Amino acid sequence: MAVQFLFPEGKRKALTFSYDDAQIHDRRLVSLFNEKGIKATFHLNSGTLGQPGFIASGEVEQLYEKHEVACHGVTHPFFNQLSLTQTVREVYEDRRALEKYSGKIVQGMSYPYGEYNDRLIQASLNAGIVYSRSIEPTMHFDLPADFMHWHPTWHHDQVTETMLEDFLTQPAYRNMSLLYIWGHSYEFERDGTWDHIEKICDRLQGQKDVWYATNLEIYEYVTAMRSLVISVEGDLVYNPSAVTLCLCDGEQVISLHPGERRKVGQ
Ligand SMILES: [Zn+2]
Image 1 (cartoon, rainbow, N blue to C red):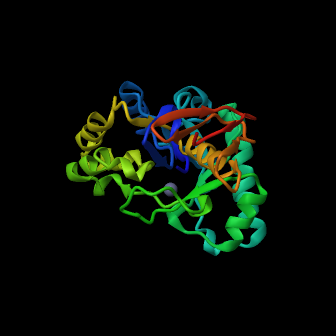
Image 2 (cartoon, rainbow, N blue to C red):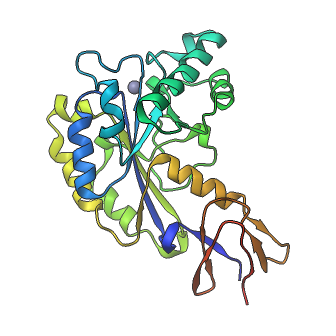
């Protein structure tokens, strides 16, 4: 029987959230996520930090400590209106500033206004970005085919109780299901919908079969998984990555550590 991948610790589901623009309402959202044990990625525009209504640069490291900080363009530009040089600068300088403010290596991005093009994708890859999120909802729980075209499952306004139940009761044969919710924290304040995100978090928190991860953690795991070396017969596997992979070998769930080779399907 062929081996199948699972998320870390043999989990079959992964959940990630993605919030853009770093307005001050991120404070309340981060505190909600922390309380519920949920992980998220926050996409910041380094050029607007510290302006009225936005998070201050000096606040970034501590506020987003348990989450991921990622790029969103220095000035939240319309990328289709930029020259190649402007495009490069908007990504590279955003990365540089956010790394300084967060004290961490920044590798993720989301496209402002959901707008992207081939120049932007190539410039971003050259600048060290490894994934970027669009705003096109997939309405399904599949893993992304291409991380530079990472389409979320839904915007939070689209999430219903039925959809959450559907995710939580995905059949085992699907092996790996990913729920990816995105939005802006100011929308909860503007629309008076904080209770909506609280209900979503309440329903999704504390699930034994769910891996709570940032966007980058999911990127790293899935990329490592896709780099597994396997024999033609499928009986020998080698993990050349720096990530511990979890595999379902028949009835058995096994961990394949970085650099480990082993026989499977015995
Ligand atoms: Zn934005």
